[in-house]
Amino acid sequence: PDDDELGLGVRIFPSLPPLYRGHPDLHLRAGIMRASRLADEHQPNAEKAFFVADLSQVYRQHQRWVTCLPEIQPFYAVKCNPDPYVIRLLAALGTGFDCASNGEISQVLDVGSIDPSRIIFANPCKAVSFVRNAAKMGVEMMTFDNADELYKIARAHANAKLVVRILTDDSKSLCRFGVKFGAPLVAVPGLLAKARELGLDVVGVSFHVGSGCYDPSVYNDAIMRARAVFDMGKDAGYSFTLLDVGGGFEDALFEQAATVLTQAIDQYFPDRQHLKIIAEPGRFYVSKAFKLAANIIARRAPLTEPSDMESSEASSDQPGVMYYINDGVYGAFNCILFDHQVIHPYVLSLNGSFHVPSSEPQKLSSVWGPTCDSIDCVSPKTMLPSALRVGDWLGFENMGAYTVCAASQFNGFELSNVIYTMGGVGAAEVQQLLAGFAASGYGL
Ligand code: PLP
Image (cartoon, rainbow, N blue to C red):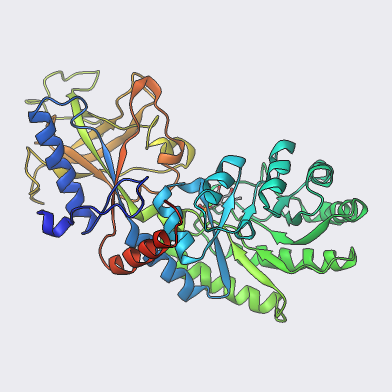
């Protein structure tokens, strides 16, 4: 890739890294070439792993959202990836934000243009000081699912607009939340009576079907339950105006989920002139937008025989070679432990070349992170070219959700940097949106 393809890197926001043009794959190659130059200069950490974030991918996901769910306003779940560019782009696109803590609320409000009414404090169990802080910051919308939370809110934020989070079927999701959050329907009338007694304003209902939902039919059941809770609200003297359908949207199943949701909303909320519908998508917006490049820093034979990996054949079901890369489960790949992801590497460079013939002989291999802990395994079994060597690079797709946000620096390994590109289709729109945003004095 040359400078023309990549752009020189503009600094729309002085406080953020430069923003490049061009397809993310060009930046993966450019990053690898740069690493090789730094290695030639004997620079420390020359081969450091890095992300490439394609902001046009975030933009395109938003277009998909607006096309399929025009009635539902997304409140991006900041926890999923609190990346400063992602937040600025979504702010410019007009989404709301789902925050779970004081830190996330500050991060969103510090951008400058985001009115606190565009935030939902969607954590049903909050420290009282956080509730008080939300009041101070002007954030009114917040969820609850228990009576103690109501007492706290009555004390610390009496004007809050409350949203009762209900329990729904989360059995069809990678990450289930029902064991921790969500009021069962039988408990809701009691909670609403308590809210009324405390003089609190309950404005609506929220649920979360679990993150990484692989059976979108569960949204139908969840909407049916939400309808029942709207009716309970009426019995308690409330007139709800907000329905929050949560997150859980998987990229490959998004259109299907949108159809189920739209039909269920039509069925259970046919009269909805006064109803505002929001959602809290996280993964959907960012998963595909980030790729990771990691360097093979070491290679060895498995602990058992054979010891000479060059000459021996691996037994058919055990990896014959172990590769060690410079990001692992204590870093970006924490998604293996926390988000139940299964990781599939692909080869970015082989013996220093970006040309990787599909005919290249493959070998069953395992891939490990850089720390001294044996839990730090990125892929226990994967087919990789036998010719792969120390210094080559592996690539990982779909690394934008629940990765960098929960990465640690255990063992002294730094977090991987992010290279930003405005990307391919949608790049012009991204540049225009961000430049317009910055020109208004926001996000600088
Ligand atoms: N809303 C809440 C309250 C959550 O806890 C989460 C994920 O943890 C989300 C939204 C985002 O979910 P997803 O990334 O599956 O869309």
